[in-house]
Image (tube, rainbow, N blue to C red; front, top):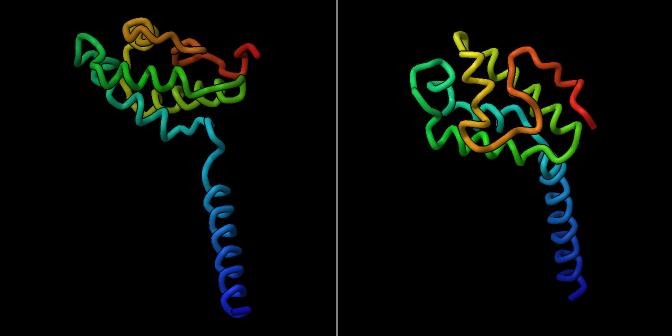
Amino acid sequence: MAAKKGVAAAAMVAAVAFLVMVMAARPAEGAVTCAEVDASLLPCVGYLTGKEAAPPGECCAGVKRIRVMPSGTAERRQACECVKQAAAKFPGLNANAIASLPTQCGAPLPFPLTLNFDCTTMPI
């Protein structure tokens, strides 16, 4: 009987250790990643390059996801930097389309969408 308790205790310790490792490997809840921002904005490229007259529904859903991602100043700044990095990957983006995207989608962002905005100046 004591051997069974020892095996059960070892299994419990192993399970807890595994859970701790999994949780440590994940970004903090609510943390903004550039991969999430990229995935959210990818459907917008056609509109932002002038190939589509209006942002498609998937694009606006992505803008709305970005709108709720950041929960504090540091995360808003991170999201802002991610947006700028994503935009730099696509030549020929229309600056007016970029600036109007949140309005077109009915989802104002906590930072302006421009290619040259200094994300570090975002208010606290």
